[in-house]
Length: 337
Ligand code: ATP
Image 1: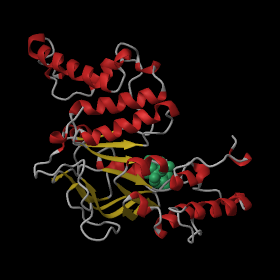
Image 2 (image 1 turned 90 degrees about the vertical axis):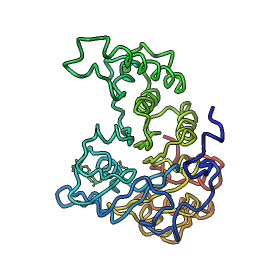
Image 3 (image 1 turned 180 degrees about the vertical axis):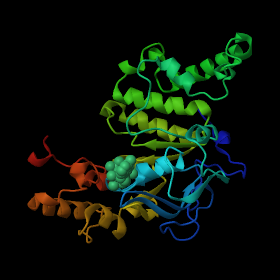
């Protein structure tokens, strides 16, 4: 368990209780942050005629949990791919900890301390849980052809890696599965394994693409706690998520994308009332306050009368009355699968 002294930054600020504003000045799209860890400028990526990403300026705040939200096809995953070297932009520059990452390959980005997980997990099913963890480690001399034959060169590092993996597996409650094949894990356990494996390089920024997708509700709370613990352990988190409960529950800051652009930024409560966000999710329903339960009920009634418009509403797992009241709303026949 971490203590408050472990939460102190180089400047002596306790980042767990730091309640100073995250943005410098007004929380507008592309606003400057007090302490950014990632700075992206003019990053664009098009596929055929579609501008999947067209971000003028974006800063990700250090030691905070930032949610990247937006309707389907907004460009969230593409932006993740570009920032982490899994895809190449048409234009743009971006830095991590002040260092340019343009042209840096994904494995080097990870070794620099910026790791990501995927919407669909990429654990190796035919390897055991421990073998998957070992693959996540950096600086293993035994991977070099010239040194592989000499165990005395790499044996010590192998032991260190195994010990580090055991600590993480225990933390993520996967220690009982150490020797099981990753293919035998549930969807949620695979997400946990992917997250644990990403921590083997002791990253500073962890980027999670839809961590809740496909996770059994029984594991949801534990996943949320693990994400909050990443921050408590000194890491910065950026995650893509459609589940607004989760966004409201754990995000310090929310960035909203639509049609490739950043259309809004701010603290979760404020962003959900922002007309640009309502517009991005709901099209013409400008007059609804997503931070207000009555507004959501009115919208639900309106949408029920017009089934054609049920796009980006609660049915898509995006925004519901529970989000603003914290209470589950009574199920109607329409909710029943
Ligand atoms: P979702 O929430 O559904 O995952 P998203 O916000 O992550 O969506 P992206 O997956 O980044 O959105 O897609 C942005 C746009 O780029 C979409 O129109 C998508 O169809 C398009 N796109 C993404 N990857 C490719 C690709 N490899 N080839 C062609 N088009 C692509």
